[in-house]
Image (cartoon, rainbow, N blue to C red):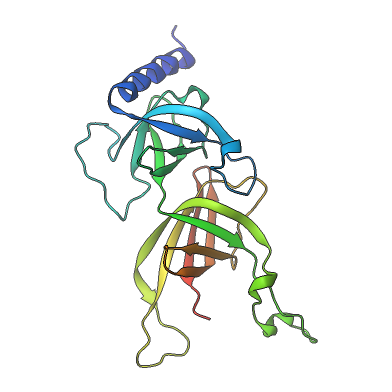
Length: 222
């Protein structure tokens, strides 16, 4: 009787052959701590990868901006783990979320690099020191330099001030792999830059599964 491991080895060989023919050479990184997961110290090596937006790998469906987790990858999965980053020559950065038997891997296409910190509060006398507000220089950093996927929500939230010229505060969904040595919690601060401006988001919902983190965050305005 043929074992699952034997069949999986043949599947890996077939996916590797497809990647060798149509794929691109990627730098493979494996995070070891909460800082800069795609630093040179975390480089595993080079891996030939074929990316597609369809698990059939037929290269017929164009990408969609609102679906960064709808990316599938063919490669030899022998030395790949969930949470590994794959960086293409373009460069585009993906992280691996699933490695199911007999199927292509599922990956997430990253569009931002984020830093995550714990809000710092001003110490005041009384029962609730948090009334002093956040002090940004006092925010302990939980993780820094992490490529992630940030997806704009379809609607926003009205701010507390509700001035006539106010626009709604955008919600975003954040996708990240597991972070060694760190655990994300509600109320943490996510910071990123678009090259012109720096943005701060507050985590309001954190879900962690075998696929990594899926978080909801809202833009901080003050």
